[in-house]
Image (cartoon, rainbow, N blue to C red; front, side, top):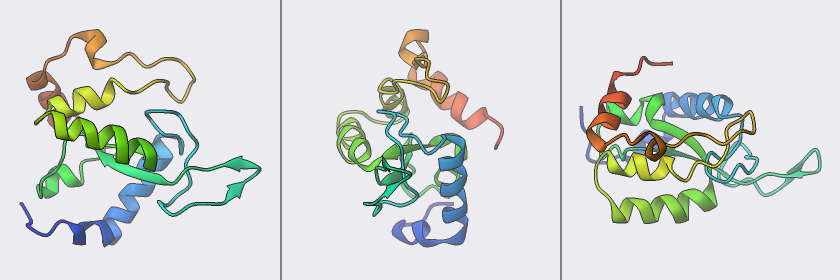
Amino acid sequence: MRVKNTMGLYSTKAWQQLRERVLMRDGYQCQMCSSLLGSGRGVQGRASKLALMPAAIDHLIPHQGDQDLFHDINNLWALCSVCHDSECAAIERRYKGARIAIEKRDYRLIGVDGLRVKTLSDRHIDSAEWENWIRGRPKV
């Protein structure tokens, strides 16, 4: 089901719980630059003497009001607000559809284990294949 006013979706309890699950799954670490993240976009303080970046949960493929895509944990990743507001915004202006997810994932530098993550471009997956992969994955 599609909704026209999507801003209200971000204030629901379901979104807040999903957001927390994504942050936990991604180890409170930006999936583009590996910065440590706080729990909200407004985090400015320090915890345990480590600087925390404000967190943003990004939709790999923009949902455009599609509630299923909006709430799909496999379509979400944790980013710092800088990467979200700069790199992701630029990618979404340049590309359309599932290609956006491929381009975003190519910016992923390291995994939680500290090793470089193999990008989709490394595997030569096209947009249609990525779209099928996102939609076919079981919910976590």
